[in-house]
Each structure stands twice: as C-alpha cells, then as structure tokens.
Length: 109
Image 1 (cartoon, rainbow, N blue to C red):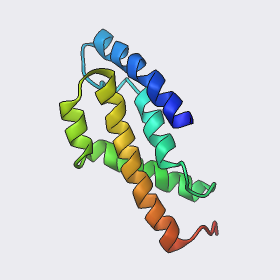
Image 2: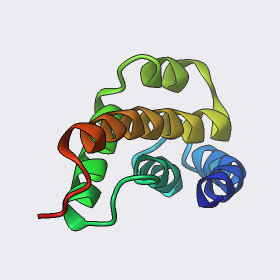
Image 3: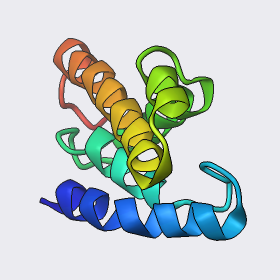
C-alpha cells in the first residue's frame, strides 16, 4: 500500500519538480527513489544486513539502468517516467533479493 501511495503521489510531484527544474529526472528529485526502495525492501527479512542489501541492489539497478529500467527512463516522459523507472529498478532488486533470501535463508546472524 505504501508503494502505491508513494507512486500515485509521486507522479504529479515529480512531474511538477521536473518542469520547474527544466530537466527530466534531475538528481535533486528524490521522491521517486522512495517508491523504488520501498518496493525493493517489501519482503526481505527485517534486519540491517537485508536492508543494506536491498538498498545496494536498488541503487545498482537505478544507476546502471539495465533493460527495462533504461527503456522506461528513455521512453516515458514526465512524472510517470520519473516514477516508473525507479519502480522497475525496485522490482528488479526485489527479484534479486527474493532469490538471495531463498538461497541464503532468512537467518540474521
């Protein structure tokens, strides 16, 4: 629910910020990062190590923008594109984390 609320609110917020700054997805627009990170951390165990792993995975996908993150970033404009590329990065990070949780286990030691 939090991811949906952040995303829905983020589309107009990020769109207006982008227009005001005159740049698509300027580094100073960070609302969209929140939605992507929340999505990446949605099902990982509540432990600092998993939180750091989730943050690292999300940032890797967000910075390097592999397909489909890069496609969304290049082809969707305005607030939708700004928010959606981070949600896609968050979804990819979530997939990686789900595999890691399954392989490593939920142990926190």
